[in-house]
Amino acid sequence: MNKMSVVCMMGMCLAILSFATTSPDKDWEWIRINDKERFDRLWKEYNDPLQLKAFFERSVLFSRYNEREMENFKRSFGIKEETLQTMLMEIIRETSAKIGWKWRFDMDEPKDIRIASRQLDEAISWLGVCADAETKRFLLDIATDSAKSERYRTEAVGSYLKCADAQEMRDGIARIFSDDVRAALPADDFYSNAYSVAIWHYDNAVGDPQKREAISTSLTTALVKEEDKETFAEADRLLAERSKEYADSPQRKAACERLNIPAEKGEQ
View 1 (tube, rainbow, N blue to C red):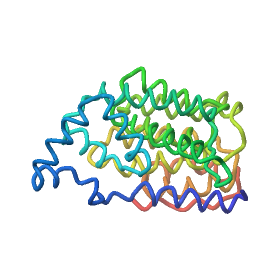
View 2 (cartoon, rainbow, N blue to C red):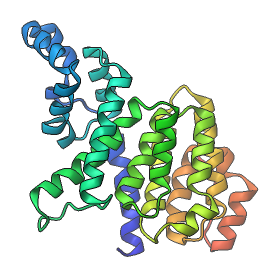
View 3 (cartoon, helix red, strand yellow):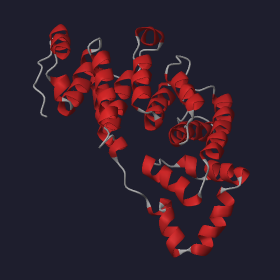
């Protein structure tokens, strides 16, 4: 993939992450209010660990759920986070063993392999609404593991930031963008996508200045060392539009000069 395509992917990633409309088939509250008989039946089914796993494997893990839909599902059916987490980790173990943490979704792959790839990707995303401290470490391990596909590493970044507090965001972003991790990871689209994912979480942290400050300062530290000019230019633009402190910082000015990129003033 050429560099211009990578930059376009960053913008697409941000746009997709920003989509938050609940589909009718995911509106559990509507079912609870308007179809009590069906809701009661589903409540029993989804609170049985085996049936919950079967439901995820045949339905949920073939769709993209946003965070609001995930939380709505948990709340509507009273699903315990421990139950959801245990079930997802089992699916992750089974699917990753089958495909070796490779993204194998091309049409020339066997159907069961494509299904396992999609289920693994979505299961990682769902961990973001039920992760405990150990699971958060697991997500960071995925994000920083060179043996795993860029697809799953990017998904793990989003899932980690979904459940992290401000300090965990600082620590996680610092680890993901650390020199030793970057040196070990392959030259793929991971870091361009990781910037977009982190900036989306900045946008989503409305009313939480601590999280916004944690993301902004952590990305500033990463960006001032960014070597890829086009990746820097797009991530720099996105962050500068949101953070005047970053936009007008001497660190940013030095990085722009180093990469020969005009530094526009912040808009805030």
